[in-house]
Amino acid sequence: MAKVSDMGKQKKGKAKKSGKKSHEKDPKVWTVFSLVAALLGATVAKKTLNTSWRAATGKQPPANPADPDVDVWEAVAWAAASGTFVAIARMLASRRAARYYVRSTGKLPPSLRPDDQRGPEQEGELLTT
Image (cartoon, rainbow, N blue to C red; front, side, top):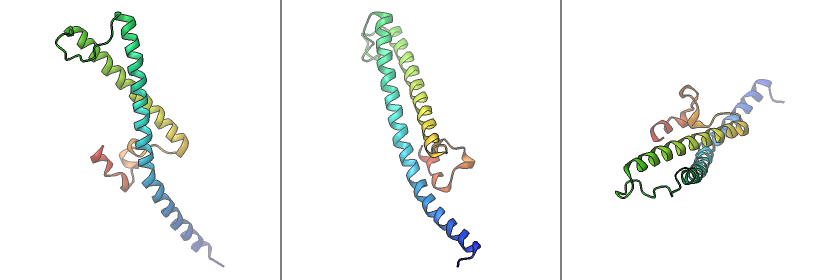
């Protein structure tokens, strides 16, 4: 019969192995998941903004705001509106994806964890992200 103290060591050993695999997998899953959410958010924002621009101005949004044929104020307004709206939509989509990730895994995605909660395997992410 195994001693109680030996059983604890066996469980710890198993937890380390399975935990390591999940740590290796989690950043990849989150990276793909957050990328898809951000792209979907940006796409929806762009379509919504194009429709709103047409409704407000009666014209198509500038295809290239840097084009000299586009009025400078129209180009500035389009750049400010589209940049702001797309950035907000991407941020909201990423936050929603993070909320789903937390509900699914019980923890924050690796790139969103505070520095003091990052494991040694995520230290390199600070330099690459």
